[in-house]
Image (tube, rainbow over all chains, first blue to last red; front, side, top):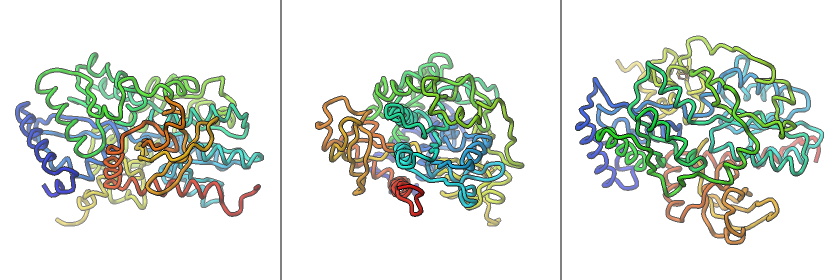
Amino acid sequence: MRYVEEFRDPVKARAVLAEIARVTDQIGATAENPVRIMEICGGHTHAIFRYGLDKLTPEGLEFIHGPGCPVCVLPMARVDECVEIAEQEGVIFTTFGDAMRVPGTRKSLLQAKADGADIRMVYSPLDALELARRNPEREVVFFGLGFETTTPSTALTIQQAARENIRNFSVFCNHITVPPPIRALLDDPHMRLDGFVGPGHVSMVIGTHPYDFIAQDYGKPIVVAGFEPLDLLQSVLMVLVQIRDGVARVENQYARVVPEHGNPVSLAAIEDVYEPRPSFEWRGLGEIDASGLRIRDGYKAFDAEEKFGIGYAAGTRNVPEPEGCACGAVMTGRMKPTECPQFGRGCTPDMPLGALMVSSEGACAAYWTYGGARAVEPAE
Amino acid sequence: MCLGIPGQIVEITDAACQLGMADVSGVRREVSLACVADRPLDQLIGEWALIHVGFAMALIDADEAAETLAALEGLGEAQETLEQMAEGAKALAPKGEVVQ
Ligand code: SF4
């Protein structure tokens, strides 16, 4: 119990942990036959490793890390397309800092910047729009990346650009949605998942109903959770209790922030600007139907894929993932980070080979930062 | 990158565009209030919001704000977000800007 003291309320944390142990036991789960709970959100993965929750919970409970890190699930082809856009004459390419170090086939955005491309890290798509206002003779492209939490921000920014008729601004849209990959994982006959911890901040936008199919069609419990360690533990307990009682419901542990029906302004902006793509490619999961968004025809002028004739606008592409990289298997919970032959050898946070080692929300980076590094040191 | 950071709305800067100034751990940053504008904008002054990539996404109470900030600090995310805000400010005012 070396980490419990760091909790905001260690007494409460101990009580919840004891209850988790008791219910896991009642379920009859053991180290050999564990109950498997997937935390969907990369922020939760980060918190689990940071607070050692996987060590504090019983052996009969296994955390499976979900595909909820938007930088990690981006296939290499998309990174290559970013570099291709960024290296065009007259372009200012803007991106969240998280995406800078993701390896592409030839180079990452960071390397492209070092090679002379005008790539700028911004905090907000609003900053990119401001750059477009200030540089009317340049083409400013924003790398739109992220799940439903982030999608409203680019939708609202595109609406603003349209209102002001800012023609030198466009978004390279890589927005993805949470429910379709969850359905894909549930449909995968090799996957056994007993329940889910749902993402808090995604749900603040979409509400809890988009998860109804998990309970209704697949009979699995899901609890939307905050990302405080105690929130997470409480949510895990709520999932376990449902499993023990043989029920499957969508529950909301984070109701203080997540409204049942989501945020109406955000949802309206998403609906106005975006529509589902027929399918979108995910690293490790392949093409998933209706899992990505594209910009609607009404806002075509702000679609970088159309403007530069790149990506899905250029037809199908196929870029293999790097040699020896197990990102796909780790992403889908089939492999632990330490089981990847590259972990800590060909792939470290300083010299990443795969995307999961880049973002703090990636399972490999989290594993490395909070103790996994020891696993490859020659201690034996 | 999917986490928001709590900030207190301190001023309305552009009512037409629904923009306001937020104080995020002592750093002032202009944010969009569109997603939380369920009341006259002036009434948002003093409120706490969860801010994600420059957009106030949900109003929260002061206790929730304090707890969320503590959790973010524990994860090292608070510092990271403040650095990203500084990066953003830098991107808007780089040396060697081609056109003023
Ligand atoms: S260690 Fe590196 S290459 Fe292996 S799965 Fe993780 S990120 Fe991918």
